[in-house]
Image 1 (cartoon, helix red, strand yellow):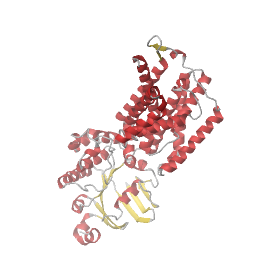
Image 2 (cartoon, rainbow over the protein chains, first blue to last red):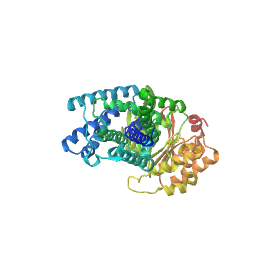
Image 3 (cartoon, one colour):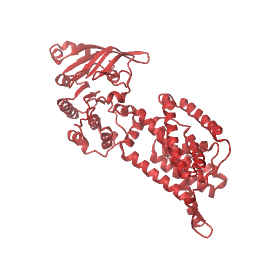
Image 4 (spheres, chains in turn yellow, brown):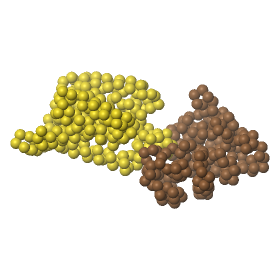
Length: 286
Length: 233
């Protein structure tokens, strides 16, 4: 294996991991702080991707499409929390799974009605449609680098918000003891609604910015959802730090698995999960 | 400043509070007394909307808050130090105080981070420790300090000194007295009747979810049979 080839795989693995983190961070926060198993979280990823593809066609600019799909995903998330999810905080997980599974079906059907069953692709924006030349034959696309930088920057922002701001303290305190947060005069309903909306927006953003490197297709949210649950379980439910490490681990395991053991590629991710859970049954940061 | 009338609270089918009237005046210190399981904590939770009474009304500063969200009731200037202290396992001492900081409803900001640390110097030494890594006494100081950061007009303390060593208890009572002297009203639940007789302006005794005594300390001091009968002293 030659160095440049290895480097390309490493970059791909990190980029995939960072993208997964955007989706998984919302999933882990929603489960950790609100106690909600949100199976519909992958649907926000799909929504973001379809919105980006559709709006890119309408506006002619992927950047504009991504920036527009972000608030739409947040709004859809906020409304779903306020109208449906809010009624389930005191119910058990089975009721939540039933509701959010139902939401998956509704989202998938809505996608079929509005946008059809065809598979779509989105072109890389003109300004980024070039590559870093590594050797005579190997190069690395600039768009993937930008993608990693954007995801990495968002992860840093998220770390700062959660670790340093009062909003972040409320979110962490909510994961520890919700009743006490309310007893300090903090509007927990609004807090939960915002966390849900931010989680939806991040998942939607991940879907939107990944459109040039993946295909926009029915069921794309479901695949991401399953991988993100693996990430959340590896990292420890409710831990954003854990989701970050878990996402990088899964991103690298998946990428290198496909290169080194292609016959077992679909298994490597779960192998990593099993190994981590044997070592730390509650995840890395639980 | 707080007035509850005819409170009936249920846990499922069990009828815990049977028509309780309870009031706290401006700056008044009220001791809520009674044996275990008589409904003291349930009454406090009913006042704050943590549990919702099935019947009766709660008013804060003349506003009917019956059925309100806990956070909305609290924001009228109440603060709650719960039994068990309500620590957040993933927040440091500094963060416990910072997250709670809020001016009073009238904009007053008497209690700041610095003043809370002056009141509880031991917390100043442990600012970067997690709340759950503190001793019981330090946790109670943090719980009270956190409540003060919200600049309350009424402080509600459930089991103010439960499970604490005698010396720490003395410190806590000292601080509660100092808080009373600043004019903050309080409702205090504690097993230490002697201190409460000395500290509180008024005493309310609950037996099986009903008020059996509501009055000043003088009667309780002169007629020890009341305490004997209802609290078992």
